[in-house]
Image (cartoon, rainbow, N blue to C red; front, side):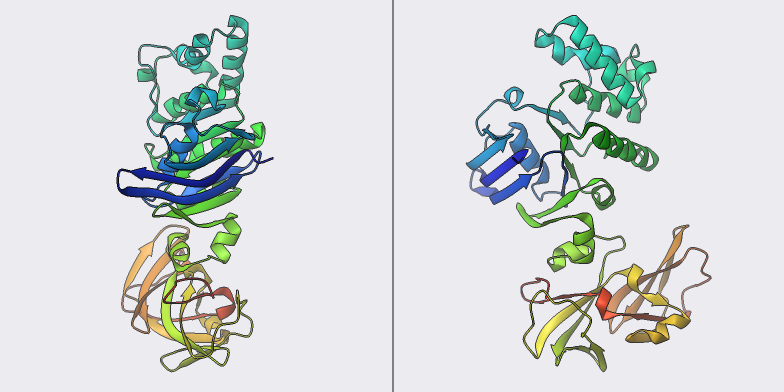
Length: 358
């Protein structure tokens, strides 16, 4: 049985269609990430699952029960929002226990659940404090704890880390992953941050314009993006693209002819068809070893971006903007000539018209 099932879901705001004929199954105990840019419909979809928005058509099932028109409180979910939404006049303990008290739960059970959540989230020393005396990361832990005490099967996270600074985001991301491993509950997590998606998810649903462009494991999405949009969205820096054509099992651009005998096609392409090849910056070979690659050339460095562990170099290849990674200690500056190369086996090929993977 799936934990969450979404069948033929449509959501319209007046004449504007936001989600279109959307199907999605979430496995029990899975950590699913809804990933996409602002306005793609990921938070809207999460709010539909939570019952905060009434859908136009379709069905939503949670643990096999049709909850399409059920109230949020009847869906067996716990939700963590982008804003902490804590009661400022209450202590941490009060915030954690407030929802349980409203359900008339016995005091001993409430105490036990609050203690368990505080232990899991390591906020036991903070129980007597009020939100104003907490840091951003501590407040977000309390917000997660408020969902955790409900002891539900499905947790929904709506960009819970976006209000935190970079260090706190990284720390709390680890905590959320550890929490999922410890609890084993189903978690659906919304983010625009691909690093969060890649590090947290069992599967990622990349969304665009109210549709799921690809649903797969992080490894599959990174190595075999189903279309050019996913290829460009996943990866930092994003994938490089060069236009050319496929002829006699070779990719040809300008006077370069690259063999494709080791490339895994989704289906055999037509001969003499236009194509776009995509190469990730980390798959570019730099230096003396590049001469052994099927494609190799020399480029002039336009811009250097030192990032500590590695260095991102910007240049131009065949008239197209192109980026590659070098070691963080590489001594390179604008104007330098650098030898680079790549193997088409590690590349991705796309149809320029449909933008689908070849």
